[in-house]
Amino acid sequence: MGEKNAQPEDLGIFCGEETLEADLFDASIANERAMFDALETFGLSTAVAKRVSAARDVGGMLGGEFLTFLVGARTKGRFAQRLASSTEALDPPGYVDRALEHLLS
Image (cartoon, rainbow, N blue to C red):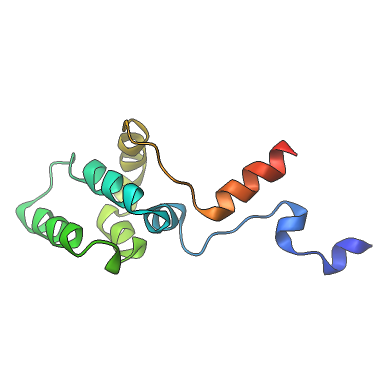
């Protein structure tokens, strides 16, 4: 069987570096802005709002893992819905592009 030495993507398995949210954040500055915009639509406490503002000022230096921490598991679905309803086009991480190409080929 040739599958024994195949790479995961050859078998249709596409993995990111972190989570989809973190990878999406790290994929482009435009994604970063859209994701901060979506996060700011929540009724954030003053302390969290200050952290979000400081993180936005620093930009990509923090990386998507920090955004994932801010969103947290409790609001992940609502965050995804707000991001999806954004008018901003998002730049997918490379592995998402490759997965779509794989499915369409």
